[in-house]
Image 1 (cartoon, rainbow, N blue to C red):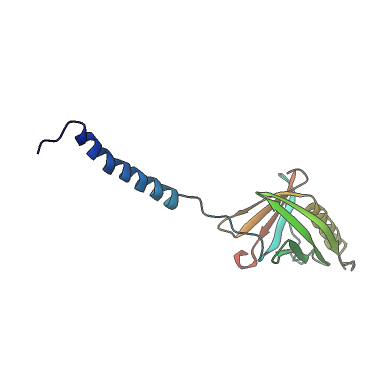
Image 2: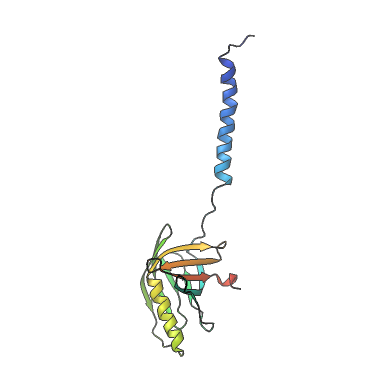
Length: 157
């Protein structure tokens, strides 16, 4: 049989289209960015905080924490007092609201001051990012002028 010159390019075109479809499916599946770990169900310990270039490590005797149980609730410890509140997330933006804490006095006035700064910063949270394979979280506050740096307890050095 004699094929026309029109049929030969059409026959070659079909396998090329199938190869392109297969390659595009592979590239989107195998090279897509992994999903960022979610906040609900996670718990964190504050490692340092403060404005850019002036990060202060947390006092060793204090263990400020931040927990995100399921839903839109958060809670934790400021080092002396327990606190709770709610949060909302939109992309990498985070807003903390209805923050309330117990009112016990700390024996150490420096710890009391640190706790007050921590809770004030948390109320001004603006953006967040989870880094190092989910082992740390940075919450920027006060219009991204400062940062709260947390580590998962199991990732603490």
